[in-house]
Image 1 (tube, rainbow, N blue to C red):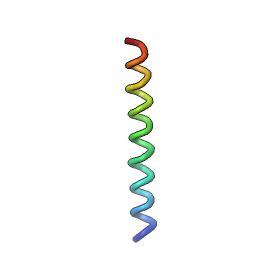
Image 2 (cartoon, rainbow, N blue to C red):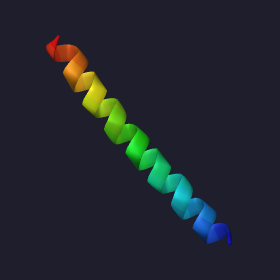
Image 3 (cartoon, rainbow, N blue to C red):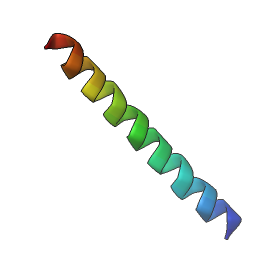
Length: 30
């Protein structure tokens, strides 16, 4: 059970970081 929680947390963290990088890159272009 703990392992599944940790896996979901890491997955959300990775997605959040990727979205931040994407928005940061588009923001820098403007």
